[in-house]
Image (cartoon, rainbow, N blue to C red; front, side, top):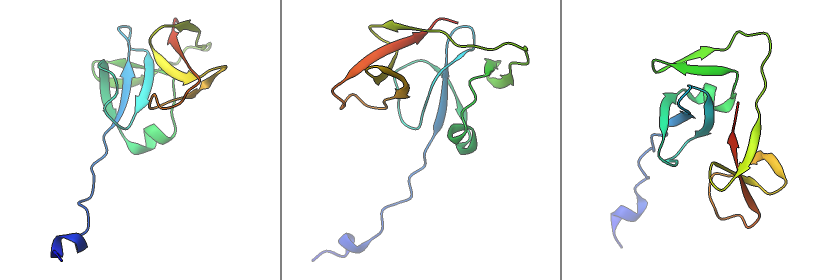
Amino acid sequence: MSDELYLPFPKQQIEYRLYYDAQGRPVAMASHDYPVGNYIVITREQYERPNYNVRVTNGKIVVDTSDHFHVQLKRSNSGVAVVRGHASLVLENDHYEEIEHYDRIS
């Protein structure tokens, strides 16, 4: 038997990403290669505690300090994949049967 079978796997480096649109508004977060788009690398802490009340400006996260913040979504044929009927349950792969897509409009 080969000694290679007993060697531990090398530690994987995970890159956490915040994807954003042309206006700098967050679109999605991922810890893997997600669809092509604008993104910045974020920390694990930022990934685990998402704050969509931010904008990306010059490659940096800037907190939106306006006193009113809301996000409007619309169904679409592309965009962020979610569980059908539950727009807050984002899917990271397409192996789920009941999928619909949403895009942010605000």
